[in-house]
Length: 267
Image (cartoon, one colour):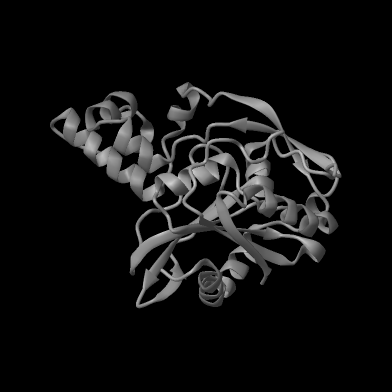
């Protein structure tokens, strides 16, 4: 890899258009979420606060984005480590509100994944797409650079109160990690939608039920009747106005200077 300043040029040259496309399609404009909001429905929370992410891959000296995961919220959000073409060298994800400074989990995850750099995209002044990239200086993160936690020199213009909960497991996860073929036969074998299946053993019946579920992509209705709802709690995020964004990004870069070379650009 090249020196940080030259590397930033390469990153934004190769990835700027892709960053812009993801931000424009996945991040709501400030005018759509301005003011005080309260989000109780998980679908509303995901629409407003969901983060989309993708691995940054390298092949033949150039960077490209890998598969972009749809926006999600919570611990279930993951960026693929696998690059279909080339090798993974970093990651990119979006932030839903003004400001693309990294969270402590963002920094810890990048270090754990041994990334050369990571980038975060969002919207700043006039809702224009903006991305910042962070290249580690090699200094170990031993304090939170945003202590007091995310307390900048300017007060937020509003806040978003939302219901935070662990995301429900996807159908494929349930079938691979929770339900064996015997479980499926025992739990759903007498459901009307599977009555036409003729098998000699519970394992065979369960395997056929598994095939049917994978075809539709949904668990039987009965599953949702007895499944436990994910636990959650109320949380609040500060919301800064677009005209504050550039100033706050400058403060964030200063606070991170010991740990990261950072640079942001409008796309």
